[in-house]
Length: 171
Ligand code: PNS
Image (cartoon, rainbow, N blue to C red; front, side, top):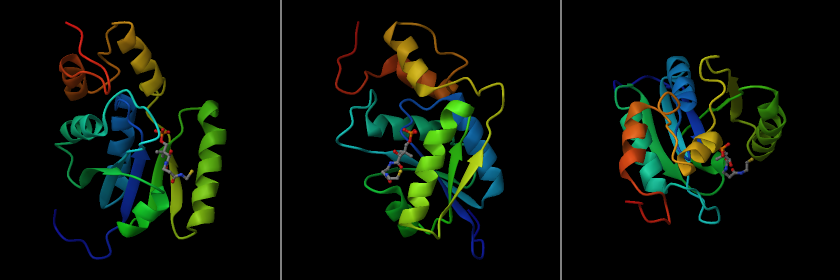
């Protein structure tokens, strides 16, 4: 990537368990607004995600491979600590509707309390993907249903071939 003086760096954090087309829509929007976007995948040893952090990072890397200025990394601990260490000035989060609002507002206020220099920027996803959630994708996967049109093709291919974290693949 060419060097930009005082580049505006944003972080798009999440669990991405698994990454969806909704996430990809927000990544594309955020990448247009900032010089560099770090997609940060939470690695929380206390949580039990369905897919390993390595797989979530790999799926996202494949899905954003053609997008300049977008990097995918795993992070642990407090988001604001990681963001500050990376020179980030904005946290990007998506708001799909009213159900997201209270949680996102609370999280933004807490992050501001922890580090007032880092702002949270809310983006609205395209209506075409605003119904998609990782939780529902996991539910569909658990029932052996199709996730085409809900996750990026690269993720769909991976999900078809990889076993979920902590489970053995069914024949
Ligand atoms: O995709 P998600 O699960 O809605 O993402 C939540 C995430 C990863 C952004 C949030 O849990 C987080 O930032 N975790 C890191 C720990 C932290 O900084 N907590 C305090 C701020 S609310």
